Amino acid sequence: METGLRLCALALMAALLNLTIRKQSPELGLALSLCACVLGAALLLRALTPVLSLARSLAKRAAMEEDLLEPLWKCLGLGLLTELSAAVCADAGQNALAKLIELGGGILCLAAALPLLQAVLALIEELA
Image (cartoon, rainbow, N blue to C red; front, side, top):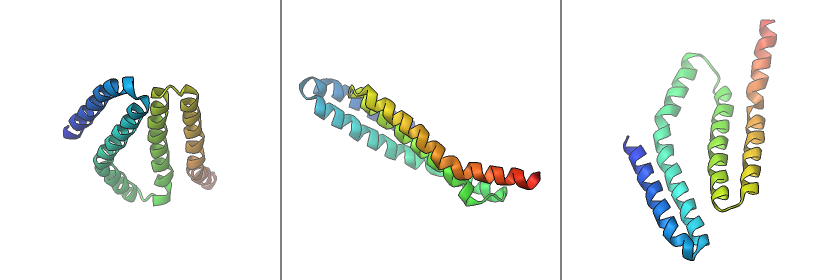
């Protein structure tokens, strides 16, 4: 709850500052947005630690290899990174670049998930 409040406060302050700064210097407004995004991501990473711990614990209980979770984490990270980067580009008025980032994130996520797909196919072959 506290992290959510901090995140909302950070975003609202950055938005208000951005509205006043952007009139005189759009570049500084964009830099302010980027800084707020980095600080917000740092806040969220700290909150993600218990989730990662639980996922590792569940994987050990299910006797899953750690390598099978790696594509999941990569896809999660890529999704969050591309969503944030695309939003910043769209905010800067660069919609084509934002769409390119979104497309690239999807392709890279598919590429990161290939080892997981191969493991599933190997499991199906063993069962058949």
